[in-house]
Image 1 (cartoon, helix red, strand yellow):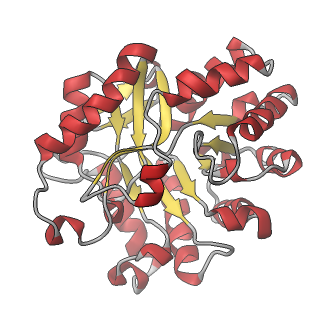
Image 2: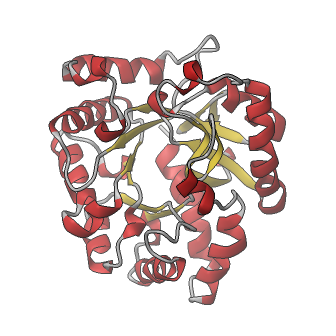
Length: 316
C-alpha cells in the first residue's frame, strides 16, 4: 500500500483526506532568518494555526503540502508544531526554487548526480534533528524559458523521482504561460529523463485561459494544478472555474488539483503584493468550490480533485 511522507512519518494515503497540494506554512527568502530578528518557531506557528485551523475545523482539511524547499524558508520545526497542534498532516518539500530568486551557488555549480544525491537524501534519510523525510520534490522555472541551471535541476529531480517514486510539483511564472508554454517545456524535460507523468503536478497552470493547451498537457498523463485560486492578479477565478469545468466535462477530472499557494506566515513580513491580494486557507472551500458547483461541476469530480487525485500523487 502506498504511503505519504508526512513530517511525523509515513502514513497510508487513505488517511490524507481533503488535501491542499501547493501551499506554504512559512515562507522566507534566503538570508531572512539571519538578517532579521524575531524568528521564533512558536510565534510563527501561532500565526499559521489561526489561519489554517479555521480551514481544518470548518472544512475538514486533512493534509497540506508545504511547497517550499530550503531556499524558500522551509522549516520542518514549524511544520511539525503546526501539524501537532491542529492534528493535520503536513508534507515537506525537497528540491529547488527558480534561478531568478537565487538558486544557491553551490547548486548552480554542482553536477546532476550531486544534486540528485542531495534530493534523494532528503527523501530517504530526512532533514533536521528529527530526520523529517520530505514527501514531494519542488521545482521551479523563471519567466518565459527554462535556463541551463534550472534545466539541470529538473533533470536531477526527474532521475530521483524515477528511482524513488517521489512526486514532483512545479512552479511556473505568469509570462511563461502565455508566451512559451513553460508547463510544456517543464514536462518535456522531466519525461525525457524517464519520470513517470503520473508522478508530476505542473503548478500555477491556472494563469492561462487556453483549455486546449491544458488538455494537451493532461493527455500526456500528468496533473495540472489550479493552485493560485484567489489570485486575481493573473486571471480571475471565474476563468479558472470555467477551465476546471471544461476539463471535467472533457473527462479529465482525474488530472486536476486545486490549491491556493497561500502563505500561512511570511518572515520577516509579507510582501506588499501578497498582502494586497491575501486570502486565507479556507478561501478555496468558501468561495471557489461553490463557484465550481454553480458551474455544473459534480460533487464526485470535486472529491476527485480534492481527495482522490492528491492521494494518488502523494503515495509512493
